[in-house]
Image 1: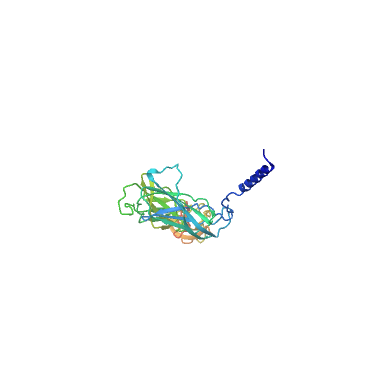
Image 2: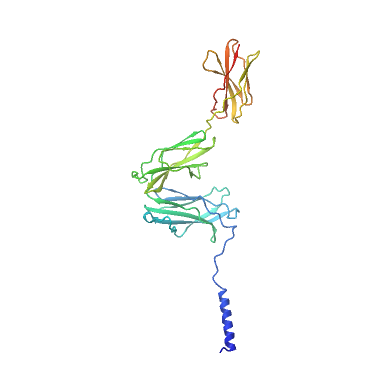
Length: 350
């Protein structure tokens, strides 16, 4: 039988255990949203014969949308898998992070993070991701993951040229025939064109091509664009990014003339002939040119220039006898103006 002392002891022991159970290990602190950076979304890479260079933009906001002033460090994670052992559905075996210093954030988002690494091995697939930290306990979510298969890469394209066209540009280059160590290329080779508006953050445009010419369309006339071309070696269906060319710039040029003027009419006056036409609706019309030919001539001759705010011209040099035919063109504001076709002719007979 239990004595009162036994019962009291049991109660005391139970209370002690309950108190001990309430003093477990503490979990890691959860940082407030106001200091956690947004994830990096533009992690990029380029390779050379020495290794790979990663670049990305500094985050400028927290996940709550408030401004960041500085990044303490960046955590760079790397994984290496032999190509023969690569499993697309398996987890990526990232190693421990390498920390590199951060710095003050540029509010305009122009500051770039950079990480370079060498000692890459041929026949291996590499993966990288980056996290930004504002403290040891406040880290962003993972960046986008970049991956590539390492092989001695091809040299970068040379003699890159860019020609501006109407709302477009034509990029061309010489074919690449050697790897960066001087060996001749024995694998298929493609080229990736990259574009930038400021000769800085270049981004891929279009798909890799086996041609040495690329047409970039839907550009804004009058704006300058910058281009680079990267070689891509296809090793057993794996794309190995190669060298980058230097950048070239080009300005898309308006080569589309205005529509020909309509409603051209002529009236005989005491001083000569007055020519009228409907004012153009094209916003970029700078002026008009008036042409005249006689019945014996096949080609009209230029006789006068009129500002775009007017739609009338008086010909005071027309001969007094014979039949004459008048036509008008419109031209735009380009440095070398684009001139329309001639309008329908209007005739007058003296």
